[in-house]
Image (cartoon, rainbow, N blue to C red; front, side, top):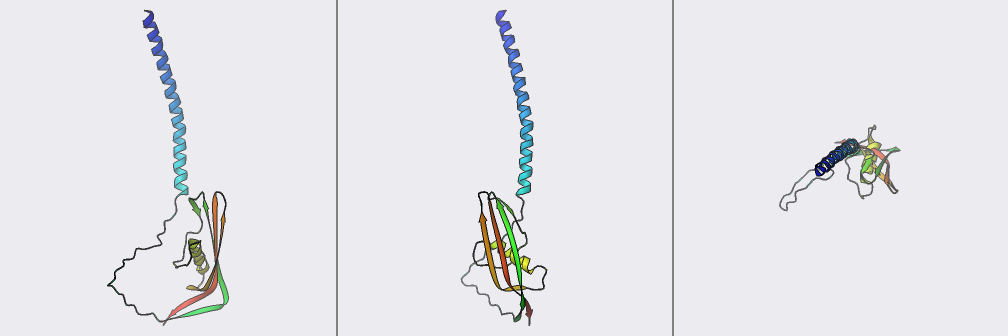
Length: 165
C-alpha cells in the first residue's frame, strides 16, 4: 500500500512538472514567434533592392566577323556652362545599401565607385536636353567607419547633343 501511495504521488508530481514545462515552452514559443516574425519582416524590408545585371555574356568565335558602317553624326558641345551631378550611397554592415537607383548606361574606367559614377552621370543629364557629357571629370570620395561605408561620386563636364546626319 505504501509503495502504491509513493507511485501515485510521484506520478502526480510528474504530471505537474510536465504541465509546468509545457506552459513555459508555450510562453517562450509565443515570444519566439514574435521574434521570428519581426526578423522576417525586417529582413524583407531592408534587403529588397533592385538587382541590376551589368555584364552580358559574349560568345567568342574565331571565324565570325561583323562588319558595321560608321554612323555619320555631329557632336554639338555647349561650352558656355558645365553640368554637374552628385550621387551618394551608404552601405551599412556590409549588406544594406542606400542610395540612387537610376544609372546611366555608360562604360567607365576604374572600379572605385562605378555605380555611383553612373548614377552621377544620370543625375547630371536628367532634366537637361543634353545627350552626353563631354570631357567628364569624376571625383570619388570614400569614407569608411566601423559599420558603414559612404561613397560620394561627382561628375563635371560639358553637355553635348548628338545630331545624326
